[in-house]
Length: 275
Image (tube, rainbow, N blue to C red):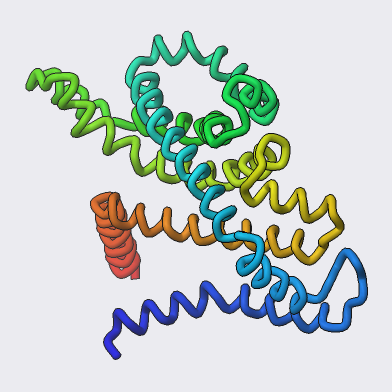
């Protein structure tokens, strides 16, 4: 077993020991529960398996995940494009800041009834409201990323008369993407909440609809099962986002690791010199 495999296994062990421990504690603590509202974990998992077999829970999950991913993708594209446009032009950003602050203060879930009236109860209202909810952390991080371009880069751009499209593609976008990716991880959690609420009050399918129907008919085990499932979906999507960052932004992580290595070497050298 090489060192890389050992390192990966150790990281995996560190990441999963606490969830496994909590799962075991929950299983043991609820084993003899007779409460209607807090059933044993064994019964919840049994209800989850039955729902996949008899209630098309897999189809409901795919429907919800598809809407969530589409909403996040729309928010990412709009957030990066607007973030670059606002971050590269301080007068424009200063002029639009009051409008952005007002729009950000409006609860995004308030748009759900309006969008249902306009677009119906299909997938589009969910996608649009998820995009409206998730765009803000991506947009604000993208603005900061565009502002973080060093002045020396701007001077070099003017000196070499680099065209604006080339500057945006080779400088502005790479500067924004790492921060936009961090905003996307925050937006994922917001998107999950928005997805559930939009499906509870404006849908006839999806995980939110399944949880609402289970609760309204006092199928408590199914309600808990749907809640656990949406948590698992969010966790898996978060892992996929981290993996996607490592692949698409590998240059950024390499640069960060090199900077850390140089910093550690400098600190070690300075301490050795003082000693």
